[in-house]
Image (cartoon, rainbow, N blue to C red; front, side):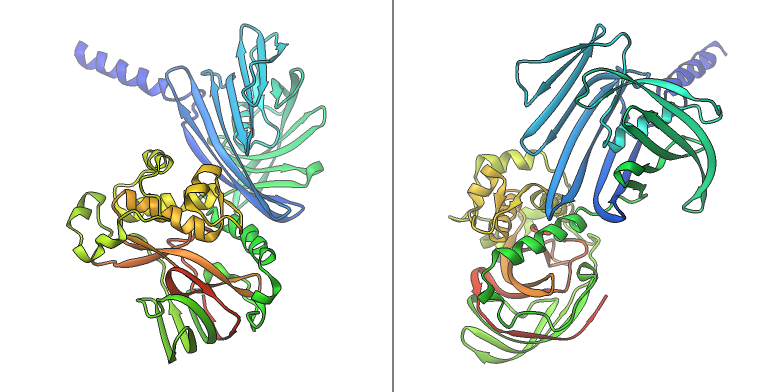
Length: 470
C-alpha cells in the first residue's frame, strides 16, 4: 500500500512538473497578412526544459518580392519570464540576456553590450513575434474582466514597460467561441483571441499596423511564399528575347495545384534529351535538338508510400550507381555538404529528400548568375541550376540516387527555362521529381515540362496550353 501510494505521488509530481498553470507544451503555425494581403507564415514551439521553458521558431515573409526569414530561440523560467533571447535575420543577430535585475543587449554577437536595469524579471516581447504573443496571452487570467499588468522588455527597447491586458468579449472565430484580449502600452495595441480551455492564441491583430496572424492547424508550406518571390525574380532576370513566343496563352491562377497539363510545344533545346518519363508523355516529330508535338504531364501527389529506408540503399540496382557518385559540378564530398547532412533528418529516402529539398529552397537565395553548387553552399546563393546540383550533392552523399534535369516551368504567365531534380525513392515508387528552387516535392506541379537531363539550354519557341486540371 505504501509503495503504491509512493508511486502515485511520484506520478502526480511528474505530471505537475510537465505544465505551468495547466498549460502543456504546444506548437503553433500562423498565416500572416498585412493590409489584407497574405505575405508570410510563422511557426513557434513551446517546450519544457529542466530550468523552465524554451520557445523557438521562425518566420518567413515576402517583402517587396524578397523573402526574408527570421529564426529565434528564447529560454524562459517556469513562470515564462526572460532568461535569454536570441534571434537572427539574414546576417543580423540580436541577443538579450537577463541576470540579477539587469538585461544585457548585443547586436551581431559584438562584445560590446548595452545594459539596462530591470527591477523585476520581465517577459520578453518582440512585438512582431507570434511566439512571444502566444506566451503573453497564456499568462492572462481570461475569467477576470479588469485590466492585468505585465512587465515586458520589448525587442531592442531601452527599458521595460507595463503591458496592460484586458479580457473582453467572447466572439466566434472559425466556428468556435474565443475570448478576446486587448493589450495596450505605449505604441502597442494588439488584440488576441484565445481558446477558453487552454489559452492557445488563434488570431492576433495589430490594427495600427494592419497586421493579422491566423492560426493554422497544419503548418503552411514554405513553398507558397518562396514561389511568389522566385517567379517574379526569375522572370525579371532573363533577357526579354528568351521569353519570345513563350508567353502562356492561358493564365493559371493556382499553378502549384495543377496536376495535369496538355500542350502543343515547339521549342529547340540543347542537352541530353529526357522527355518520356513516367509522368510525362510526348507525341512528337523526331528532330535533332528540338521537339515539336503534343506533350502531356500527369503527376499525382506523393505521400512517400513504398519509399525505401536509407539503410536499404546498398541493395539498389547497379545501374543506379552512376547517380550516386561525385562529379566535377556535384560536390558530394564538400565539407559544408557533410555538415548539412548531419542536421537533416530522415530514416526513409523520401523523408530525407523532402527535408533536404526544403532546406535548399528556404536557405539558398536566388542569384540567376551564380550556377556553381560549391559556391552556393558557401555563400548561400545560387541559380536554379546551382540549387539542383547542390541538392543532388546532398542526396548522393546520403547514397540516394538522383539526377538534375531541366526544361520549362510556368512563372507569372510565362514558361521559362528552369532546373530541378529527379530522385530514385525505391524500386516500387521509382523516380520522383522535386524542385529545390520552389520547395515542391509531395505536391509537384504538372507545369514542369522536362526536356533534358544534366546541363542544357532552352531556346526560343512556342507553347500552347490545350488544357490543364487541378
